[in-house]
Structures are given as C-alpha cells and as structure tokens.
Image (tube, rainbow, N blue to C red; front, side, top):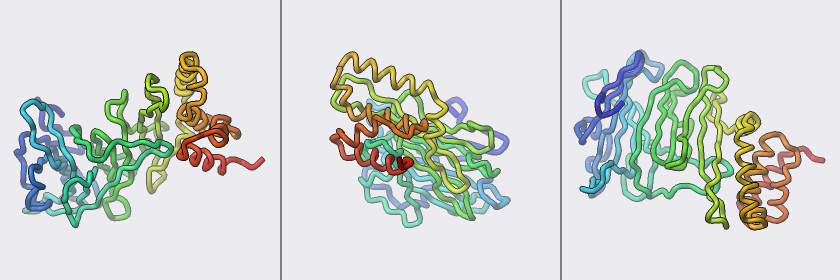
Length: 313
C-alpha cells in the first residue's frame, strides 16, 4: 500500500488507505468531539471475514492526530483505535472496539472500548515513554494462529499487538513494546512450518555506566500455544549461535577498551547469563555473579527468580 495505489486487494482482504481526513463515517463510534486541539483521522480500513459468521467485517484504524505544523512532513498521533464493524447492514454496526497505546494524556473515555496495554518483554527493564508522539501506524489481516480465521496484526512506532477471534469474541492475544529506529522491526514468521506464526520482538538495551558502548541488541520470541502467545526464548537462543557469537564478540571488544569497567557492568553480565540459561546451562555463571555482586535490584531479583527454576544440586 502506498500513495500511488491507495487500494490493495488480496483474495481474502480488501484494503483501503485514506488521506487528508477524507473518511469520517466511523468517527461516530468515538466521543462526539476529539480532545481540544486534536482530530480524529481514519487512517485505513480492511474488509474480510475475521470471525465465525458468514458475513465480512471491516476493520478500521482511527487515530487521534496532532495538527500538522508547517515544517512537519508526517502526521503524529497520541492514541489509536481499532474498530471492528459489520458493514453489510445499512449502517456500520460495532462488533468490537479497542483503544491502543493509551498515553493517559487526554481525557478520551470510550465506554465500549477495550484498552490494550502494551507490555515490556520479560527481562527488559526500560520502556518508551507513554506520552511520546507517534507517527507510524498500520495493520494487516493475517491468520497468525493457524485456525483458518484472519487475525489483526497492528504495529506502531513503539509497539505491536494482535487481536484474534477466540471463543466467540474478539480479544487481544499479544501486545508488546518495541524500540523505534532499531535495525529490525517486530515480525511474525512461521519457523517450523506448522501453520501458526511465531512473533519476534527486537529490543535495544542501553549499556549503563559506559556511555560510549553501543546499545545491546536483544530478541524476544513468542509462540502460539492455542490460547495465547507465550515467551519461548529458550527456542530462539538455543538455535541461534550467531546471536551468541555477536554478543560475546561485543563483550570482549568492550573488555579490551574498558577493562574492569565493562567486566563489572551488570547489563552485559546479566544478558550473557540469560543467554547461557536459555541455552540450557544449569550453572549460568554471569547470573550467579549478579546475585553475589550486583548493585541493581531488578537484575538481582531477575537472576534470583531464574536460579529458583534450576535443578537443585
């Protein structure tokens, strides 16, 4: 989908992208007026069958936009809504409504909307500020869970979410923060060709106490268990020698540059220990070092929680 071809059609899905606030008929599902100084903007819609009824539904992405300044070339928004509607009736009828990335900055209460709270990947201790302005927002309809019914994959500047029709209702089955501007974006991929997709969420972790050190790349892998997406980093790191080699190479390089400073850096020690644990080590030495010598509570508590899962000696 691009400016030259605003409509895109696949055998199952018809997409429509809107420009310049030209589509307003779906705004009636939100409060009558947007917060002062902001505007509703229907960004895009897609029509397909995404539930257990024979009729097609229309999924609509509505953003709460900030007015564009003369010098700004992209739209920025503070909140997003995903409306799922029956549009085969004379008037669109709401089937579900989700509020995404609620910054809490503006009083925009929508009683029928379910709020999707993005989560941090486990063992990642920083997250983007909630009041940041966003620009990128889009969605795609794809059968992620392998049940033959299309799901909604939503992605924005700071996170991704999945809405799926499960047990007779639309519900969120995944929602995670990501880091904007990182080398790769969150993606879905069928690693084992079993018909359901895994979700890879990249992250970029700041190396504390060593400002000149580049951010540490990190990856969280989630897989569908039939009810929800659950973390399975053991699978990713056990099969990914390249990632471990990259991590060790960067650590050794920083050791040559900073010596004991980087050796004592809890961030590197924690994530090296975490990879060791995911790869099946029963005695991840770096995590043991964190417990015995660490200074930051979140690393110590996380390391202790992992050691509780290890076999007793």
